[in-house]
Image 1 (cartoon, rainbow, N blue to C red):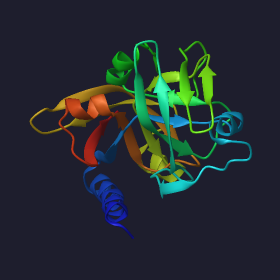
Image 2: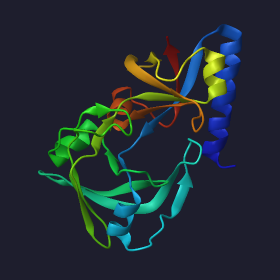
Image 3: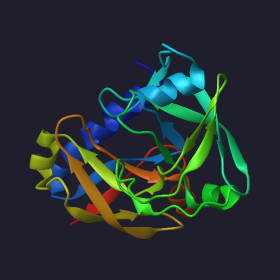
Image 4: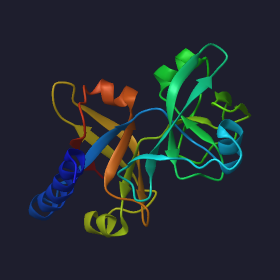
Length: 212
């Protein structure tokens, strides 16, 4: 087990122990950098017919992984190079960026939950074998809390519930509108983007308190 996996295991055990002793909910929080989810047709357009994405490393959520593949994202104003692709493939291509990235690209994406891309702006993706023009699919991901069904039941939280998240330290803040995503395919972890992580001077994965 690598160092990050050990840290995560300790954080999950700590969260349960603290809750059972105090009733307070502390959860691990990770910063999610800009990334891309691809559908099968776009994988082939960007990397070639029959191409299969190659795993780089596993992510915290069950079945999710970072891929070796990286792409260039192009907007009206500029571009972002070496943007990581995440797997597995999805039914529709989606690009998740932070607002700072959007300024560089010249795109103004809305804050949305993953998969909610209707009416969002598009962009151009450039790969080693070709390019794709997206009509829509660029979002800034809404901050959210992943929980398994068992973890949600323990904490008394439900899928779709909106909670608050408090960080401590020199740049303490309370994040509003944190959406709970609970059930199969989820495991305890809050995802915020790089802008939000920088706002609290976050380094690595830390624990924050959930406020119902």
